[in-house]
Image (tube, rainbow, N blue to C red; front, side, top):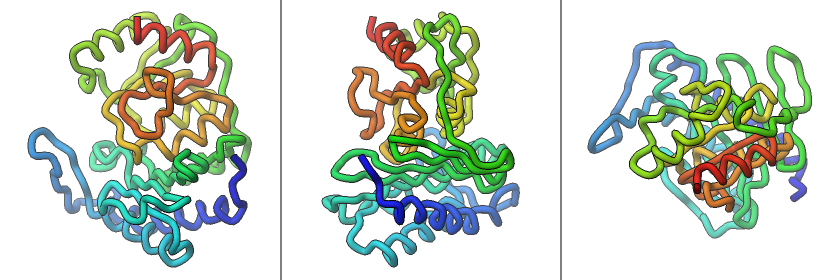
Length: 260
């Protein structure tokens, strides 16, 4: 799917806008609200300010586009192009002062992820892709993103946010995968997916994702040569149970292990 170059340029404008709204709130004592009826699902003033800035810019420049956002809901979802926004993916890291969060800006075209960016304004990094290619800009300069080969679980570095998210049969299935890998690390939310695209790690396995947690990351990983699906091997755009890998051979092995 070829994406309009104007939309690719617009990603950076959106990221600039979100970063300007977020950074005054990072590592600053401020508003944190728990959205969950039970447990802890935090939202900050930075989340809300950033999503408002993103929505304003989209509505001003592309009024015929739809928007799906974590904090302020949906509008015009039957449009050909729908922006899928998570202003701060990794809010728990954000309120803890850790720079492993990011702004996720995704675009769905005719129901399929077509463009995406993870922007980290504190480190000045941006990981973006359109499903055909992927690119990075940050302190390391600018370069194309490419996943790395990893054929087997025994050689793989695996990330997940936390094993505590897996319940029942999903926990058993995940542990079958984790028990076979070379190295496992926890945390990092969207940042871990970008490390797959950049060729530093090999896989991410998660459950309980929303569309705004994953849509922006699919074109980045696929553009870098990787693969993103649900646990059944279908589209991951709806969220839920997700596998992302840099090598298709490893992907098939993880799916087989999860579904054994």
